[in-house]
Length: 432
Image (cartoon, rainbow, N blue to C red):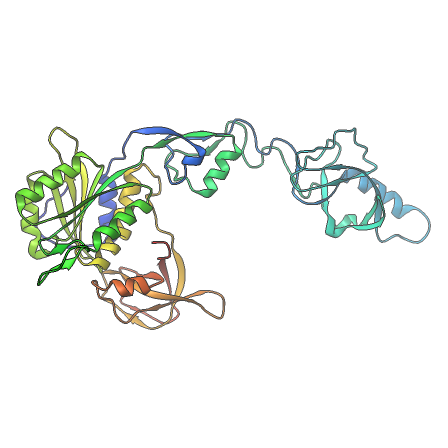
């Protein structure tokens, strides 16, 4: 991992910084086999292929009646040509039934219809299913319907229309969620090869930081960031390692960081990366690896350290030094670090956050050339869309407003003024 060591702390756009981070990180190679029950939240290490086509045969997509469209068309023409009053509906006798898992196995006769249910096999000789709501039952075992209301082949799933035999069902690098689990089960994958779980060490720095169970002296504060970051790491599916608090003494800090690198795949700290402290922290980290100090063009969360730590006799381990203010630490994790964790785990999308689109509730100004992640309240507007109302207070130290927020309104880098009603992206915060 080679990093630029330019001492000039220029404002770095978030997108540029993220690109540099993802380019520098090399995914881990170790993998393991896990059962389907253990696969949620893991990243596929190898692609999964379908052994057979899906569906494997013609299946009904509806509850209704199966029939031969050619035969019905022929009989309908004959009926319309017969003398007497024209009949508005065409009638068929129903013989037999096909249920999911209990197919109709007797020989079929195109002159009759077959009662059929969703997921049931459509027997040879029938090619169309009419939904039961379009059918009138004239008498037990006799139905009537208008053939013009249903096209040939309707409501019948074709063999292989989802996945062909030997087709890739999921690619390597795919994060396995509920949808992926269902597809893996559908193709008969009882176990899968996944990247082993990341091990991420988290520690807080600063002489003024104390654990919540300790009394506070003058000028001291409780450690909030470590508990927050540990949980954010866990939510990515990684194993979080709590290494507590370390002071600012250079030798002690260097020793703790090296130890962290020997037991983890990534080290995350918070505090000690502001402009005034950058030289001190740079010297400490330069002894055990390499580091880049950035002033991100972001609000909140401007100071960020990224680099690597090389433990004695070991390979380089990515390192992130996040701001000490808790909201700034949260935002930089969401904007940068969790993408890096996804990349390190081999995920092809890099833990991209779920975004929703919302309209701004009020006119908003910001400096152009800075991406802002602002706490907001989300409400449903009268047209059914989301509306984002940005909180008046955006203090980087205010956890209360972060807890009260429904989302982070993402105001674009290039924008200077946004009007009420403008569309923006919002990162929803529920569950985070």
